[in-house]
Image (tube, rainbow, N blue to C red; front, top):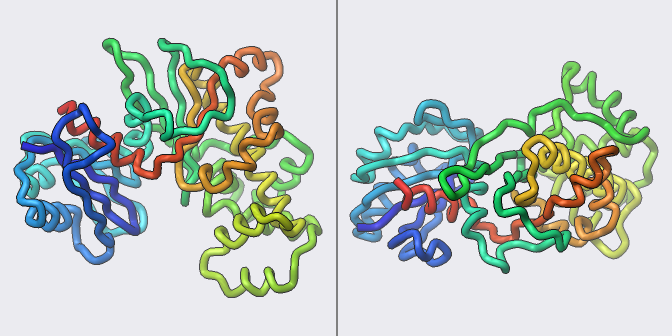
Length: 327
């Protein structure tokens, strides 16, 4: 008997088999499927199990979308999933669907030292809550609290909370974006892959200069975010791209600090998702930490929160595997 875990997104579906909860970093088998090539998650599961010949005890899947009463729909993919159908497709005794950020959070208690990079040398409080903020295509958030001698992960839609500016420039950006988004600007609108072009457009409106050749690349690009961030991280970034990255880091630090305060994350605040590992040098600058700590009278509490970046890109899969082996 084996355990099945999956990390399910709009672009790809990653499935893996595990023998037990003792070694979640080394699956027995693993395969990635283009999500658009299959009409359902059940179809991917059947293909994978046919390839491996495995018999499944239990399964868990992290999915990019809210999970309500054991059912979910993935953003940007016409899949509707529920635990009953997945149990039938896999032959598993039990199946669990998790929000993708809940899945990443679920991995944190079993991450190893080289799975994370420390931004501060603060030691975690073993009884403290843990927060997770993960900017990728969107902005995901989750948290963990102590329960029955261990940690239990909980999903959140905190990335859609109101964006709260902290500087004059951020106030100007909010005013610029309010009419664009019908009077409501969430943190995801500025602190995610889909939000970075919004910051960039504001910086353009504000008069920051750009290289002519870069403007041509951006005009032709289907997704300008990688171009903006690659230039911003280069040795000679354009003024507009650099200002965009600086703003992104400032907003990310502030929202990470907000979650740390909300859940009293003395157990740690972790930055996950696809973007933080790619901009790690920017996050290691003192300005990022100062924005994180900038909570007025509560600064001394913020100084007790360990700040980490998850650099293992399979944390979501590990978290799903941990959930499967606990069923």
